[in-house]
Image (cartoon, rainbow, N blue to C red; front, side, top):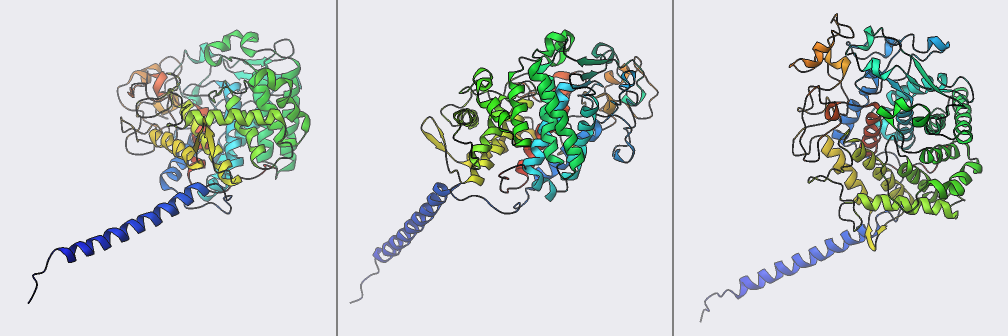
Amino acid sequence: MRVKPSSRGCCWWFLVVVTLALVYDAIVYTVQKKTEESEGAAPITGPPGAIEKKYADALKIAMQFFDIQRSAELGYCNKFSWRGDSALTDGSQAKLDLSKGMYDAGDLMKFGFPMAFTATVLSWAILEYGGQMAVVNQLDPAQDSLKWITDYLINAHPEENVLYVQVGDPEIDHGCWERPEVMSEKRPLTQINTSSPGTEVAAETAAALASASLVFKSDSRYSSALLKHAKELFTFADKYRGSYSESIPEVSTYYNSTGYGDELLWAASWLYHATGDKSYLQYVTGKNGEVFAQWGSATWFSWDNKLAGTQVLLSRLTFFGNKDTSNSGLQMYRKTAEAVMCSLIPDSPTATQSRTESGLIWVSEWNALQHPVASAFLASLYSDYMRSSGTAKLSCNGYSYKPSDLRKFAKSQADYVLGNNPMKMSFLVGYGENYPQYVHHRGASIPADAKTGCKDGWTWLERKEPNPNVATGALVGGPFFNEKFVDDRNNSMQAEPTTYNGAVIVGLLSGLVTTSSAVPSFT
């Protein structure tokens, strides 16, 4: 008798399929879990990996803003038809050549404090990510831009205890709207010295020159000159302590310093990396560290506060087997760096609440993007230190996070800048299809053939048309906390770019363009 086929056969096959699927999932889960658990356990070695095109494209664009900001005789360096020679007589009244350097932002001032910070961060980016830059042909442009600043900084230090920290009068400068190529106003010089000290700017300049001495170590003569100036400036900064905001009160309107202890530690840290002289390490881990380091307190990295950068920079010594890693002060820097990293990872129990609804780190209305980009740069560095040293986990109040969590955070901030935001706007000028058209930048807003000068140039600020020139690579101030952006030339709070913004975005993009092992030492 034939038995009517029942559903038992189908069920049997169904059970087989389900069982196999469960076995497969278990194997995948186990492998994945093993991979996650072992991430960072084995150091990352070898040359840079696959290139992430969007970050490579963005890096090539960001690097160009340094060209736009240059002063002096540009010659073959001029890559923009609307830029030309400018500020050729800067420094002449003191018989100095201060024609080089870079304009600070959309204006035509040379402010030594943020310019030196720009150089230090650019040096750091090159030292850490020069290999990645080279893969996308951006190492030479980065070194060239750095040297344009360090040449200026060397000339600005004509005597051991004298440093010229500003070229131009801000009131005169901000009373004009003109192209740098036609400016004819007086360009007075401002200096610090033993009777008018400026510890923070002298120390930051020392950090810039010390770090650059490592970048240019293949040119022993130039590297030695940089290091000589760095040592002298650090001694000057430390011996004649005093804030330049107090010595020169007028600078407080533009780049007011909130203290100089962080710059002293920052400079000494770079000098230790550049020289190996243990006295600099003792400087940062001993009494000065106890007084200035704010161990255990997470801070933001910026032109005004270098503590978080110092903590990350000194942490690399503990990651890569420095023989002084048992130093208790050095361990405190690493512990504090870990606190900074834990504050950045979004789901960490100690995550900062200073974020927009879409996850952008938020600290200040003015130049809002400086802090998230700088934070992401530090996170990228710390992630690479962990991966390259075989450090699998970062502990945040009992919760563990991987190097990839830090890199994910860094990418989230970079992606926001590049257009993954509620406005669908790229804040990096020239990247993507939708970026600011009314950048608060004099040279970009005035045609190269315009015949206007200081006062009649204001008509170009007020024009309704977009800028005639594209300030390629400019990272503008960015959105408000409510994630709105007003693309208006008069809106300097949001629409003005800065050279130091250029440094941190170049550092971040260089870290994300591809992956490779971190160098154990800069020397």
